[in-house]
Length: 267
Image 1 (spheres, rainbow, N blue to C red):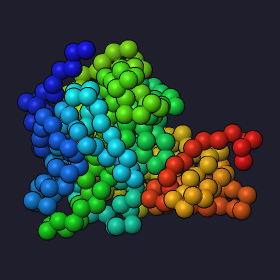
Image 2 (cartoon, one colour):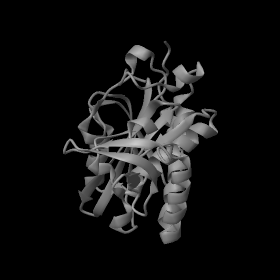
Image 3 (tube, rainbow, N blue to C red):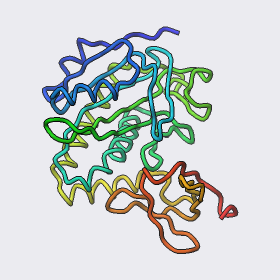
């Protein structure tokens, strides 16, 4: 399979508020972006790897794919919104990735709470947002891994998929990366500038697009306990609201191991 390299020249002139650095191979783009943050790199610094050898997902789950088969990148942001709003960043990112894919013809793209991006029922992208303390203040490193051209045997997990598997064609990774970065920057800027109204708009838009909302779910907790009920929405902090036999509960992304859909008969 032919897997072209990214066009670094095209990416270098993307936008004045985005500075894209393309590297051939690194253990983790989030780790490199974290270093850049601590060195004083500005908001909008982007690290993209043709091959990531030791990628991590949420709860330190491993993630690896063949060279040039994915889009693997991290974006350095320095939010000025209150710290209480920072948990929205992963949700905003997943929602934006799904919207961008739909705009490019992947009609089945959707977000599963909190930030997994699906094509139908299969995962096509994962997101990891990490807070970093720097001399200039706290920053956020937003890591995204999107499966582009993997064959079934190359997927990071057997329940995953790739854009090529779903469409039968391999999209141009440079063009797709430009669309993703542009969409993320626009969504982030609107959220930052919108204050409480911006959070309310994001909450409404995210809940309407999230496939988890409205489902019967089983929430697996780190303690080994489970919470079962109907996911009825997300609250002002981006936590999932679950209505179960004992009433309404809320769980944050850091409070759960898995959220899985169930049938009514499983409740």
